[in-house]
Image 1: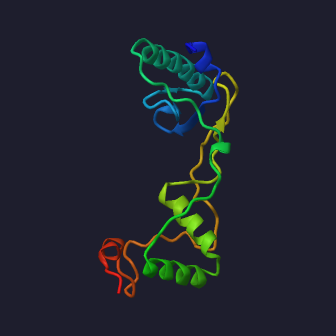
Image 2: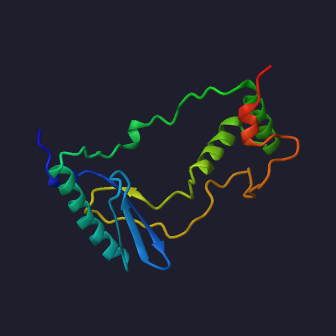
Image 3: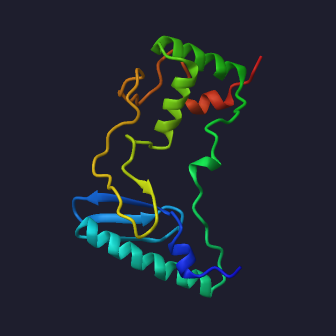
Length: 170
């Protein structure tokens, strides 16, 4: 099946918008690398990203480049298995206990922080022509008993991440 620009424009791509105090509104299509634009208002940014998407798709179709299609949340179970050294497993359990949370919750928050996850983003997966919400405020996510303090250095009783990766198991 030959897929047209109209086909791709009808797909529920993730459009992300963020306010930039100096440049108005920045907007991008998450799945289409390099497809981004900006506008002075949210409405103008939406118009601009629609045009940018059409141009991006047109160029990709003309050059026979692969065009990624959006993936739904159903493609992800929310579960995965990670093998870690026993010593790291122990340290994670101990830290979770010290924080008074489950190991699962502790790792969930740590992973969210590591990818820069913020409060539930006001981003939506939707058809390109549908209205969208915007993200205007950056707040740490998720609120948790882990606290919001950031350490510049590891505690004296624990090696930093570089040393941890080099430690040998007994």
